[in-house]
Image 1 (cartoon, rainbow, N blue to C red):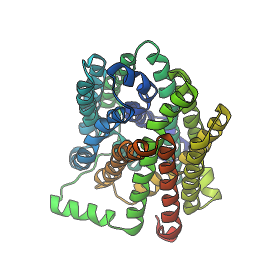
Image 2: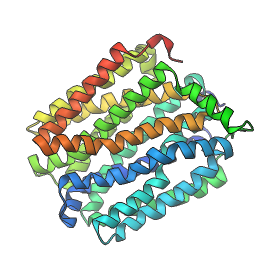
Image 3: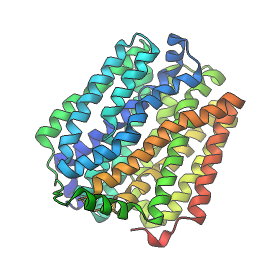
Length: 392
């Protein structure tokens, strides 16, 4: 494993960062165009959440499979075809003749995306350890946030010319796949044991109290992110303030920029406050930010709310990932991290559906109220269930 600043002097880390950027592209780049897609296909606001659901749904079922295959046959063998499928299906969305076919193509693109958000973190665990791993995890979360900051702005700007053009971006996954073939230099697991023994080790790693708590927190925070924030924040700006797609994209980018700044300081933050305190900061930030979004009546309040959300996101995401990746060895890390990715996909998929129910009953206020309630649940779990003394 590579240590200290030498980690930043080779291609591996930049390939990991690039995979992270592609993994986030599938949702972050299209949400500012949701109002335009609703108008074009004459659908209701609840239906547009299907573009997230269709994309994330395959990951629930396929991520554990791809993680297992990556442990048995190597990371590259899974990453490269996944990126090619992501790119081809993504650009095909431009030509969807109906909302139904757009959902179908998003589902196929989601198949390609299913391995990306677990294998990038798996590679961090394979290549780095100790404080260097913490730093790289923080920087990777910053890259992720830079992507989610840039994609809404870029997507919003592109959507001015037509919502179809936002689906040009996925083609970037194809040259990345070629780069991985030629440039990724990583240790590959050498699993020669029987599948029964392999799955026994994976289960033993998963079946720990803190691991279950972390997975539970992950699904809740992604319900908040994909349900309350990514689906209904753009709609709130459109209906309450009459904001155009580019303005929506810029506002959402502010959250991601804040996240990037905070997560890049994870190593410093970890020296100042405990892991439990980091998780508490994240959950309370979600709570107060979604409450503020619910009552916001001007852009100033919106700016404060998204920055608070960004602080929480910047602390909790890399902290959770760094916690999890240390629990498994290279021999089963792919499958272990794929379970976390599966849980995230469940949160991404359930988010628009669950929060959509609240929206259908009581409108936008209920959608943001649901986010606040879930954040409070996260805080209670961290405060009373998480064992700070037992994490690795």
